[in-house]
Structures are given as structure tokens and as C-alpha cells.
Amino acid sequence: MIVLKEMETKEQRFTKIVGEHKTRIYSVCYMFSKDKQEIEDLFQEVLVRLWQGFDSFKGESAMSTWIYRIALNTCISSDRKKKRIGERVPLSVDINPFEDTDESALQIRQLYRRINRLGLFDRSIVLLWLEGISYEEIGEITGISAKNVSVRLVRIREQLKKIN
Amino acid sequence: MEEMNPMEQMCSEYEMLKERLSSQEIINDRLMRETMKSKVGSIRSTVRFSVICALFVMISTPFVFHYNPVVRASWLFVIATELLMVMCLFLDWKFNHNVQNTDLACCDLLTFSKNVRKLRSDYKEWMKWGVLLGFLWGGWLCAETLTHSAEPKAALAMVLGLSVGLVTGCFIGYRMDKRIIATCDDLISQIEG
Image (cartoon, rainbow over all chains, first blue to last red; front, side, top):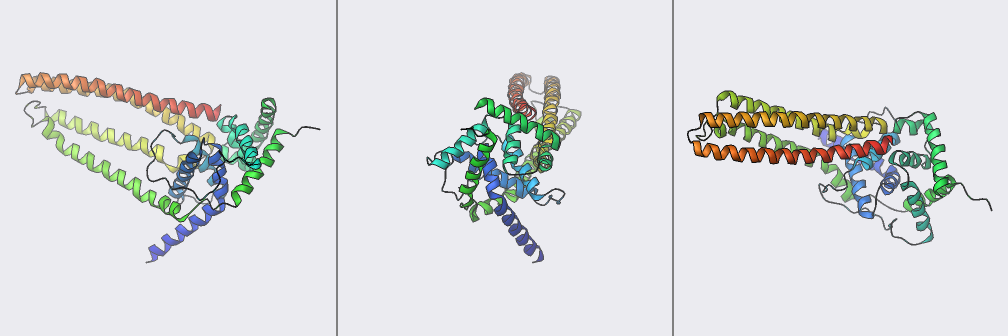
């Protein structure tokens, strides 16, 4: 009975945390996908990895750092050609960032195109920077120093200017 | 009019994305249920299946190689085969454990790429030894069959079949290994770029 109660608490806690970070996870999955189905696959894969590693999260880093690490590593390493295990559950979204045609959707696609011209590592750094994360935390997620993050961002800015 | 910096532009576009997503539910009960089911479902059933298969193969090994009149291999060969299987199972578990290990997903991007590099070298090493051991084992089995078999004609057919099987197996393994190494290379170059 006690075990059952703990399980419920853990599941509720997990759902709450995912709820708090769902838009961030979605944004990461979107930037690493080619269509809506791929976003759904990646989102589900990230959730599974988060759930599998939930017990091992000891709070040594911020929850957001841990979630970003898992989301980015999953999106980078996911084998898109592999047949997915288990059922694909559709996400509760009524937008399609790849096909919507209103003004803001077009601008979002412009952002997608810019980010997708960058390599995976730079793409990750830009995404984290856009999310407003500090250089120190970006460094913690990516494994480089805060100074290196700022140098990389300057290079990315130059690269994007050239592309424009 | 002065043109907007691309980074500033990206910031405003990202805000739009966030605003659009803020009105969306995204997750739902079914998705969460399916996610939480995954750990118990996939990992345990895979482990259970592998253990059952391994036990079946290990128990049947003496009957296939020693008591079978076509082969009649020595007990030394049977024991070596069993040990080889245990080693293969262990290495298979180790690789899968490394791939599935959530630590791989929890580390930073650079450490992640280092892990991929390690995985790549492990695969390369395993391929080298795997092919060598496969041929040694196959050669030994052929020798045992040709020496001890009670039915020489059937033994010859078996040796022929075994040779074809071994070469085909090595070819398939080599192709799979190449694919994994190419994926690792791709990941490493994308991250360390």
C-alpha cells in the first residue's frame, strides 16, 4: 500500500515536471524534426528517456539542465529510420509548425530554416540561448565553458549574417 | 532602415513559437500512461526473452554437437562453445547497456560524443575479434565433425553448410557494424563539427 502510494506520488511528480517543461521539450523536438510525425516520435522518446532516468536524477544539476540534456541528446542520437517500439500517441496540439500558413507560422518556419542551417552542436547552443538560459548553464548542458559559449555565439551570429 | 540583427530576429520568432505553444495542451493522459508503461514493458520483456533464448541454446548445445551422430564433437568443444556463448551474451548485454544507459542521455553534449566515440571503438574491436573467433570456432567445428562423425557424407554436407553460413553471417555482421560505425561517425562530426 505504501509502495503504491509512493508510485502514485512519483508519477504525479513526473507529470507535473513534464507539464512545466512541455513547451521547451516541444521546441527542441521541433528544431530537430522534419515533419509533425517526427516531432511526436521524438517528444515521446524524450519522455520515455526522462521517465527511465527519473529515479537516477539526484538534483545535482537544475531540473531544466537535466531535461535539456536528455532532450538534446535524444534528438541528436535518435535513429529516425528505426521502427518505433510501442504505439505512437498523438500530442494534444492543434498546430502544425510545418504546414500552418498564417503570418506567425511563416516567421516560425523562417526561424526553423535558420537554425537548421547550423550544425547540431551550434543548433543546440542557439536553442538554449533563445530560451534565455545563462552561458554557465548552456556550458553545463553542452560540456564547454561559459566563455566558449559566448565565443561560439559570436561565430554563429557571423555565420547567420553571411547566410542572410 | 537599419536591418535587424539575425539573432534579434530569431529571438522575436522564438517568442512567437513560445506564444503559440503556450495555448497548447501538448501532453495528455494517454501519452503519460504510455510513457510510464515503457520501462516495465520493453526492458523487462527484452531481458526475459534473451535469458530464455540463452538458456534454451545452452541446454541444447551438448545435444546438437556431442550427442548428434553427424557431429559427435568432443566435450572440450562443447564447453568452449558454451563459454563463447556466455562471452557473446555478456558483450551483447554490455553494448546494449551502454546504448540504452540513461547516463548516456544525462551527460553533456561533449561527454555524449566521447561516449559515442567509445562505443564506436568498442564495436570496431568487437567486430575484429568476433570475426576471428567465429572463424576459429567454425574451423574447429569442421575439424571435429570430419574427425568424429559417424556419417561422413552428412558430415561433409554439414561442413559445407557451415562454411556458407559462417561467411554469410560474417558478411551480415560486417554490414551492420559498418552501419553503426557510420552513424557514430556522423554523430561525432555533427557534435564536434
